[in-house]
Length: 260
Image 1 (cartoon, rainbow, N blue to C red):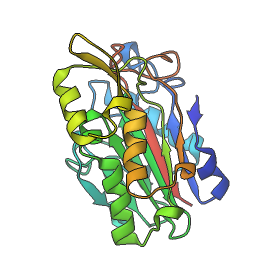
Image 2: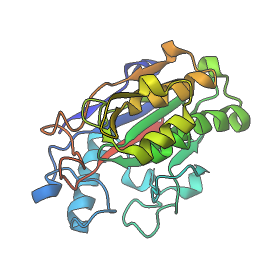
Image 3: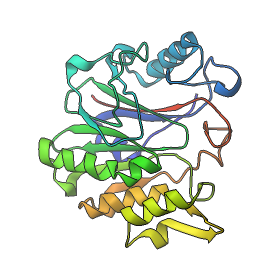
Image 4: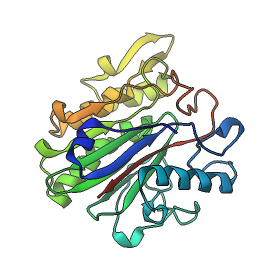
């Protein structure tokens, strides 16, 4: 089993966190092997065993995790201790129609799932609050990363200079070709930055840099560049390590963060 951590988060010693790889699980075929999402057609028993193994590896109780039904939107949910276990054992109990989770409660593990979209981790080591966000191109255009940060500022007393952010593995600009409708949405959302976010334009297509689009929106709300870690790992390029939807894989990685 492989998983990935954010060095700046690890140094605080305040959280358990990880982004999973695809190896070391029980699933088969296009879900091979560590598929962690019930929102697939994989066998539920396999997903549950994968989750148990992953949580054990991280030292997190499966009963403590909180998952959402991700819909490529911008809804943010403030998670309480009483939400523990939602979406842990089945899809029906997951928080509906939500793509970002925030909590200040220790021992509550926030979880989101990915197979090319961008996982974004947040940690305020001063106010001791955490968040996780799921940003595909729609969530990126909706600026869910910036809105999650702004929610931390407004509702949890986070100061932008203290906020640490990790942009995890996802499909990179090397392989994320988008068409004219997506190009138009990016240009509308980032009018001053579209030239650096959209490259190699040809015949109505372009390569989209989701990492930089999310970094730019975080900079725009005051998060210092030095506080933002970009993994720079492309899930399509690294199919031996990660699931990639564009590569035809059906499994999902998980991003997990919990205050100790």
